[in-house]
Length: 228
View 1: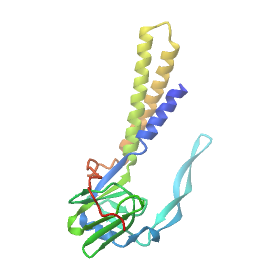
View 2: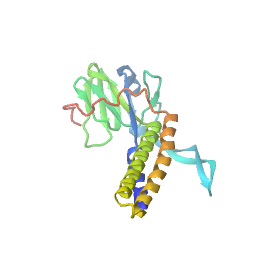
View 3: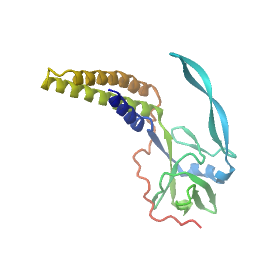
View 4: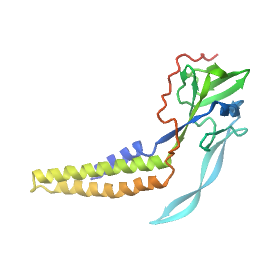
């Protein structure tokens, strides 16, 4: 039983908690990134609300979390009205007439002389250096809490239903042996009862239904300029 619950937890963590949403940014918005340099960032600590357990009672409190702060706002606005603040911790891809870059983090961005030059944070990546007339926009990726809960709940429910079905089949094939089928039934039922509320919770959160670049293929740019 513990093994089944552990497997379910791994599957839920791997499939539900890391769901992302991608948004296509208009090329006119990219001018706000001009002059960005990760060297001008600093890491600060901010206080955020949280909930922790005292025994079995949830108690409201606060937590200290690190946050990247840029020298000035590098803000992108999606046509839907969503606002995204860019920094070195946010993966972004550029779209050009020759294809799209990979979804990576960037060290510096410059839009001068009618040219876009973007230097990746990793030295092993290649610098993008293209005329602005070839730039078709960008793709911004953000976590989606609603999608995470929904997918995690559905996975948990599905695994629980499968475990219960296996237990039922085992019991049908050998009614005299009920220990394993019963265990599978209990685990499966517990997972279904846990998964359904999680999935319903996902429906209550923002599932980023306005994300318009989820299916856009990235990493198709043939040969960006090598770093100097």
